[in-house]
Image (cartoon, rainbow, N blue to C red; front, top):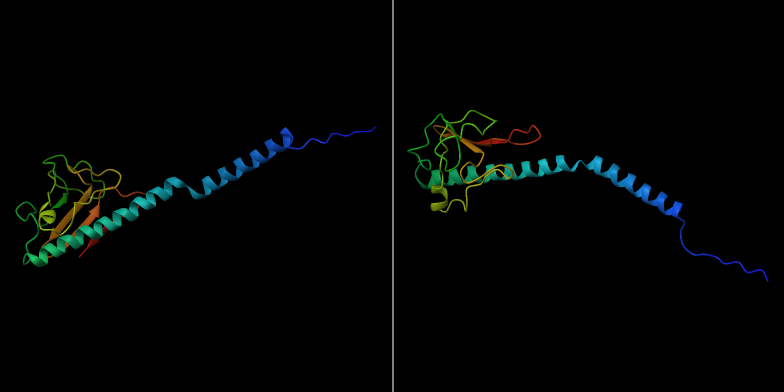
Length: 158
C-alpha cells in the first residue's frame, strides 16, 4: 500500500513572498500619492473658500450699510490687519505680508447676519488670531491667508 498524504495550504516561503510583494506595493503607492502634499492642498482649498466667503460678507455689509466698512472706526484705510480679537501681537504671525500689531475684530459681520462665524486658517487659526489678513484702500478690499502651504499665495481683491 502506497498512501500519499497531500497537505493543503501554503508554505512559509510562499506566504513571506506574498506579504513582501504587498508591502512593496503599499510603499510605492504611499510615496506616489504623497499624503502630506495632498493634505496641504486640501487645506489650501479650504483657505480659498474661506477667503471668498469673508470677502463676500464684507461686500454685502458694505452695500447694505451704504458704503461703510464693518468696524470702520478701527479699520484704517491703507493698513493691513490680521482678523481676530487680540489687541497686540498680530504682526508676528503673518508671513504673507506685514500687518498692524493689533488684530481687527470684524464680529459686526456676525451681528449683521452677513456670516455665521469669522473664518480662520484650518491649521493655525484661533479666535484671537485667525491668520487671515484684510486690507482696504478706499473702495478696494483685499482678503488673504497669512500662512498658506505648498508655496501658494491665497488672496482675493474686489
